[in-house]
Amino acid sequence: MAGNRTVDVELSTTGLDAQGRPQRVPLVSGDTGGLALAPPPSIEPELSGDHMLINLGPQHPATHGVLRLVLELDGETVVRCIPHVGYLHCGFEKIGEYRQYNQIIPWTDREDYLNSIGNNVAFALGAERLFGIEITERCKVLRVIAAELSRIISHLVWLGTTCIDIGAFTPFLWAFQERENVYNLLEGWVGARLTTSATRVGGMAADIPSGWLDGLRKFIRDFPDTIYEIDRMLTKNAIWVGRTVGLGVMTPDEAVNYGLSGPMLRASGVAYDVRRDFPYLDYETYDFEIPVGTNGDVYDRYLVRMEELRQSVSILDQAVKRLPDGPVNVDDARVILPPKSKATSEMESMIHHFKQVMEGPRPPIGESYVAVESPKGEKGYYMVSDGTSKPVRWRIRPPSFVNLSAIPKMVEGHLLSDVIAINASIDIVMGEIDR
Image 1 (cartoon, helix red, strand yellow):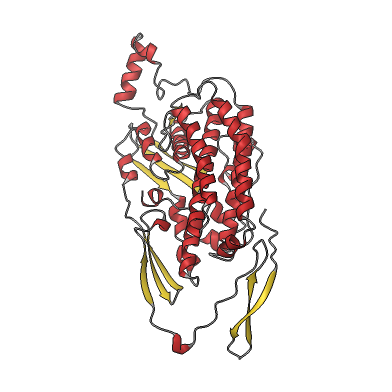
Image 2 (cartoon, rainbow, N blue to C red):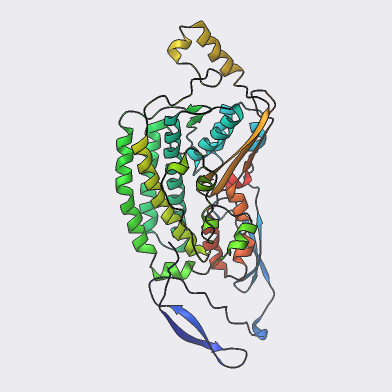
């Protein structure tokens, strides 16, 4: 997908090298990227000075949250970067130890809040493995729809805000308009837009209403046109290429050693995707491609995410066509509340309702870990049960936190202005990092 990147290059004399010969560096004059950036000319000894420390953040619009980057600069070149996190710490994992399993779901909304319903799905899968529950076929497909819509939302926010960071405004408007269209779909399904709390252990909070699929089909039909327009404006734009090619390069070995996942890893050429390598929700039965890059730079991360938008549309189309009839929740009185009509007319149903609400479902003693392919990478939930209605331990594997660990390596040697583009390419959400 990102394998063939060619560029017309002209050479320009910019000064003399150490041997007194003219120094020549490539300049972009064509439409696409693919060239390796030349090293900056060496600073004359008499022009060198002391290094300077500056703070980028924690209150800065381009850090996408309360992230603080302490940068050591030699002129405008970054010599060292020290990220500081923790300003948004909310203690989600500790709070979860004092909540019933279904009561934890609203907290998952607030980690990566651009992937709220995707987090709901991931947590429910982990809890269901702990309970030993097999969800219905209709629930599986609905969760795939929810996860892919959430992936589209997340990538659109990343795309729009990255355009703003680098200086392009129009694609931001297009991306956020489509994001609103997806939020309208979610609102019609569960009544909420940003924080959905859509899943329950054993099923969903609600089945899709009548006519909802018509709106989804319209989105599937129209959204590729927006992807095409954004692609046409950015991919071969000389300014966009010049601001993204060759920045923040991570080789395949470096990406693996840093524990990167998601588009950050795939842009470096490693075709790892949890949906394909450790399938869940029957993803192995869907036909989709895993886009990979070749250079592991900011430009390749952009290309990978753009192609993932197209692949998510394809998965949504397949899911709509295979959505079966039937119940969305399991028939298990341990975890699913009885219908209100039965709870108010049948003694046994009333007892089940009372015990679930007051005491909560009780899984067997054990532990479980479930990982999913979130928009930002491998998102994992680990939980330990001691047989009570609350997990004795709940831990999160946040891809944003792990991916951010590579930023000191990626920005070293680049200019201060390039730090903004590199940081944007990681696609972080501080709620997931600080937890």
